[in-house]
Length: 174
Image (cartoon, rainbow, N blue to C red; front, side, top):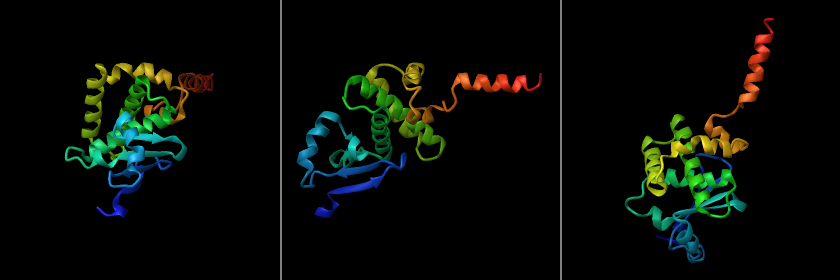
C-alpha cells in the first residue's frame, strides 16, 4: 500500500454534514489514534470535525462487509445525534438503539440492506441481553425533543399538536 492509500475520506451516505475518515495502520499518524480504536472499537466520532474515524485494520479483515460498515456508520451517527462524549455503557446502548433506527429509516429508502439491520439487532441483543424494541418507548421519550433523532422515529408531529389540529377541523363543521 502506498502512502497516498493509507487513509480515505468519504461522504456519509446517511448525513451529508458528516464525513468518514478511514485510517489504515500504514498511515504515519495511525499510532496516534490507535489507542482510541483500542478503547472505543472499530470507530469513534470526532465531534469538532463532524467526522467518523474508522479503523482501516478492522475494515480490512475478511469478515468485515459493507453491512458491517453501515452498522458502524449508523452507530457513530447515533453518538453524533445524541451528542455523546463520555463513552459510557448507556451512551453505547443509546447509540446502538439510534443506529438501528437510522438503518431502518434508510432501508425504507433503499440505501441499506436488511442484513445490516439484522446484524445490528443481533449485536444489540448479544451485548445487552434485551430486544432493542423493548426500549423503543423509553428512548422515544428520552429523545422526544431531539429533531435529529425524531426524524428517524417518525415523530415529526407531537400528539398535542395533532389533537389540536383534529379539534380545529371538527370545530370547523359546527
